[in-house]
Image (cartoon, rainbow, N blue to C red; front, top):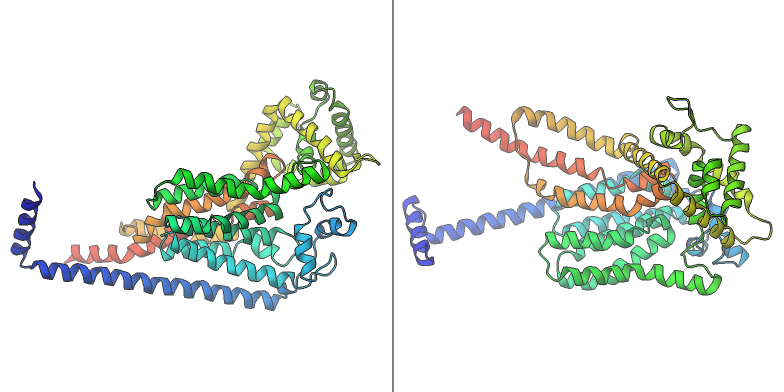
Length: 493
């Protein structure tokens, strides 16, 4: 059919229905205007809900005294570099100590840190909503992301503490908001490249467990840009990757020049030594390279002594009455999770030689840890599987916002099933919201399983945006109820 025939066919069709071409144009324009007004009305409602939630939460926290702030057991370690003058040779990065000190905080006095971190979190949540809307996610999807971030257990727990978690989380939320907004157009992407890189860099400098964000941020932008139909995505993805990785490379190069260690902080080897120490047996020690055998033997002896003294639990017997690390890591991972820090801080930390610098100690433990997992990859795989199961399970079962969202989903899904109702318009944003939530998980979760154990604080941080997925699905079901009612009325008439 030619264009002319198509026009004639359309004109005849309009004539048969009694609707003129002009009336058709006016009708389409009115429908478009109505849709814009509806979107604007929904936007205003969603923003009002988000702001009201922020106000209520602030009042509750102020009433409970949470805005006064508090020190944590790890607080002092973030000031040690400033106090000793050894900024780059300590176990913590000095950035948070600088920031906290500038705000009048000290190891025993939180100062204004709780108020500042709370305000940063609120601002980051509002930016996440704005970024989602700029990235062509509907107002309901943006609201689900915003509420999930606002009420996350990790954010609510850490913002009052003199620790870098809250500031790192806020910085990464800003980076995600920038990625969402940058996916809208080429102009937006170029304008936001540097702010995204700065916020992402701040996040992983404050909390090195966020280092996977270097890879996740560019990948997330690529997927969202594809969704929004942007061209030349590969070039901008590579450019974004380079900018996001720049803080890591520059900081590591500076530390290499200053103290001879190419890392943003000297902590990974020490952190990983506990999981490697749990894997050790006399036979495995004998299979390790000779250069690390003395360290491995000292860690094994320390563990066995702690087990004999009741300070650490022994690996339990399996069904064939053998003490199998693989079996225990897969089926009883919490045994290692409960004793990990006691082993690391109570036993392994004592093995540092009197004249050994922290950097040398961390490097020695890193060589031992890498040699151990290379010699026993099956045991490391069992650790990863057990840790992943713990992370996935607790991300749902002990995550109050997730349980609340799933409860709402269940309560809405059952009536929808009975009514045979369809999903509402916001269901089209379910894939985008899911990608953002899973991207957050990928940016914050892997290192907590690969080099240590997923503690509750790590799990709560990694699962922060996951409640947005069942929340938007429940909202789509609720949106579909009027359609189901209208269909039922039409059938009955």
